[in-house]
Length: 107
Image (tube, rainbow, N blue to C red; front, side, top):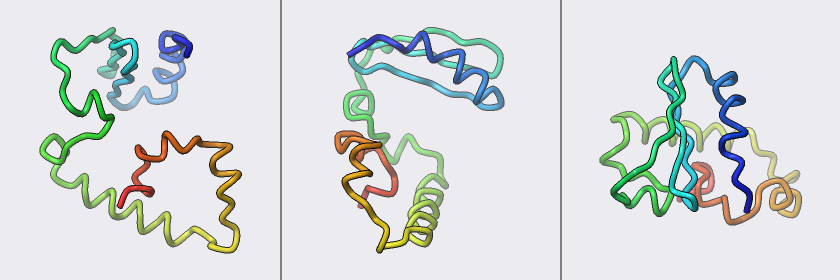
């Protein structure tokens, strides 16, 4: 759609100034990396599978990432009120095509 990555970098730099981050546009094949001091534009020469699918393989994850994902799923499940689940509103706020990236939606 629109190339807005350069417009949102300052927001992420202000909001997440205390942590390193990378925002990458799969369609345009570039992104921005913040290393706690400067923002640098990045491009990847090799197309790793996680750049194509958006899913990080387990061998690239930190050793406790699976534990944190499981804890998030348990927390999400414990705060959800089944009687108040509204799939229509959920799709309105977050389209189904993005659900595959949500930890709580993964099996």
